[in-house]
Image (cartoon, helix red, strand yellow):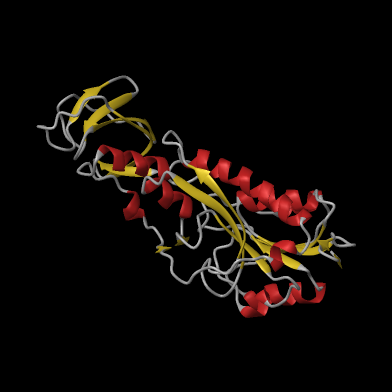
Length: 307
């Protein structure tokens, strides 16, 4: 855009953009960019496989749909990425859905910087697995945030942030889809706003918590937990994530649905089966009780036994 008096005007040419990503949200974002008159997508960096991303998506097919060149990479060879992006003289690089922090050799390439995304209310809740932690901790609100990347974890200046309430009925896929919807609208707004978001980018305070990486052990149900905490864990690890689980006869059984029961029986021990029905069972927890359903495999339980 050009500056005329007190009015900023749009760029007189499409922004030259690079895209780095390998998850379902990355594909939605790439499509939005390719459909925008404000953008020329010059190169897509993606992966053909990623064991780290439950919502993995190879962007090759979407890039081919719009005749955009693609570079598939393995591991974290940032020299390879930098060598492919540097000759393109890009205005912006979008890094949306990537498991590695970027080095200065990439961050310094585009005119306006590298735009990252984090589904949390930055500067709070930086770090790993933000959707999972938000649900597991029973948060009632989160946010959708685009920011200019630096070499830290989700610590660069904020370009756009929108609040998102989390209804208690939502599971992981509900939150994922709602977040994608909000984020794609934010992205369209950014693409149509010229350089104003970069001029107005707000530095983050240094203070802010960082969520740690989760492990399989974090997804194991302990019936001594409260019914609400267990339900939150099941919600958090629903599709597209691997699921909360409990151990039954030496094997992991995944739980996809858990709902609070109307009775608690405070004088009974955690792990006791209160009632079995055709497609679900009710179990006593450390506080309260839960109806458990949609298991990864059928198991035979009877009233009064223990898990």
